[in-house]
Length: 481
Picture 1 (cartoon, rainbow, N blue to C red):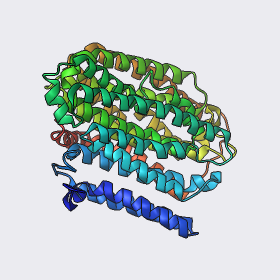
Picture 2 (cartoon, rainbow, N blue to C red; picture 1 turned 90 degrees about the horizontal axis):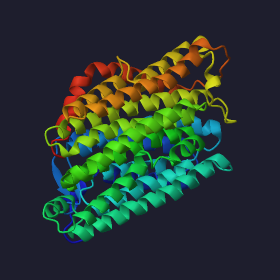
Picture 3 (cartoon, rainbow, N blue to C red; picture 1 turned 90 degrees about the vertical axis):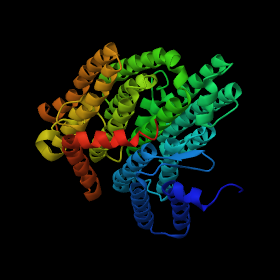
C-alpha cells in the first residue's frame, strides 16, 4: 500500500497488537480443547498491549496519512480500556462456567471490541470514526446474545443489533453531509474549511447526526431506550464490559471529533447539548427509582452518568475552560470504570445460574451474612452517589468545577439535584443489605473476589491521589487541544 510503512504500524502498535492477538486467539481456540489456554493468552495479550501503551505515553504523532492520531489523550483512553478489559476477564472467567456458556470465542470478540474502542480514541478522520464504531459494536452485539437457548440474551442481542445498526446509519449519513459541506473527512481539514464554509446548515445537520449516532453508543437520552433491556438480558459480565467500554469509546470519539472538527458550531450545539444533559440526568435518575431489578437499576444509573459526563462537554466551545473540562471527563471515566466493575462484581457474586439473585430483595441480609461483600457494595454505591472519600466524589467535583468556570451555574445546580435524587436509589440498596432480613446466596470465587477487592481499594485509595490523576489527565489532553 503506497504511502504506508512500518513506522505507521509502530505508531499504533498497541492497537495493531490487540487485533493480531485476537486473530491468534481465534486460531488457538480452533485447535485447542483447553479453554483455559485462551483465557491465559487473552490476559497476557492485553497486559502486553497495556505495557506498550504506557511506554508510548508522551508520544505525539500521526499514522496512515493523518487518519490516526497518537497523543496523550488517545493513550490515556487506551490504558483505561485495556485495564477495563483485564477486569472484565476477571468477571467473566467463573461466570461463564457457572452459567454454562463458557467459550473461547468470547475473549476473541472482547479483544476485537477493545481494538475498535481504541481506534475511536485515535481516529482523526470521520471515516475511521465510523469503521472504529462498527469494530467496537459488532462484537458487542454477539456478546450480548452469547448465552445459547436463552430468550432474554437473544432478545438483548437482537435489540442491540437493530438499534445499533440504525444509529450507525446516522453517523455515516452525518459523515456524508460533513463531506458534502467541506469536501473533507480529515478532522483538521474539516475545521479549516468550516471557518469559511458556504454550507453552514449542511455542516450543522451533519454534526448533529454524528452526535445522535454516538449519543446512542454512550446512552444519552433520548437515544437510551436500548440500555435497560440490553443490560438486563445480556450476560452480566457482558453488561459490565459494555457499560464501561462502550461509554469510554463513544465519549472518546465525541470529544475528539467535536473539539477538533466542529468548534465553529459550538454556539449552535451548546443549547442542544444542555437540553440533552438535563433530559439524561432526569430520565436516568427518576427511572432508576422505579426499578426493583438491580441490573435495570444500574442500567439507568449508567444513563445518568452519561449525563454527568456530557455536562463537561457543554463547555467545548469555551477555549479557556474546555481543556480542564476534557481532563475532568477523563478522570470521571476512570472513576466510573473502577466503581462500575466493582458493583457488577458484587452483582455477579449474588447471581445464580437459574437467573435469580438479581432483585433488590435478594440483597436482604447481605450485611450480616457477608459483611465484607456488603461493605464493598456500600463503597461502590457511595462512589456512584458522589460521597467522599471515593473516586465518584472526585469525578463529580472536577466536573462541577469546570461547568461553573464555564458560566453554566444553572447546569451545575441541575447536576447537584440529580446527585441527590440518585442517592435515594443507591442508598435503598444499602438499606436492603443492612436493615432487611434475608438469607442471600453468594458465589465465592478467587478471581472474582480479587476484582472486587482491587476495585474497592481503587475506589477509595485513588481518591487521595485525585490531584496527580487530574494533572495526568490535563497533560494528556494537550495534544488534543
